[in-house]
Image (cartoon, rainbow, N blue to C red; front, side):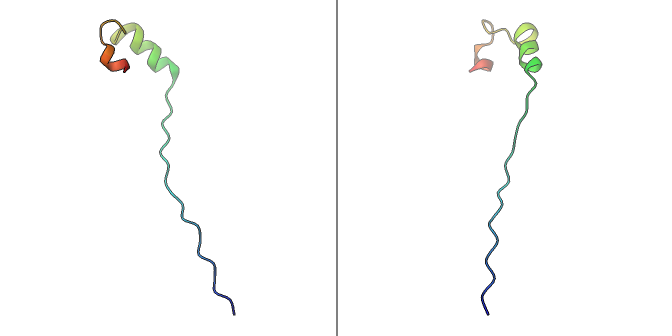
Length: 41
């Protein structure tokens, strides 16, 4: 009788998806690069 093999561990991965329009709108309206450079660092 053989011992059962242990199952491989599954690790959780967090994926963040951003629409490019979010960044374009932020650059154009709320956080211009020349006024708020800290936001874009």
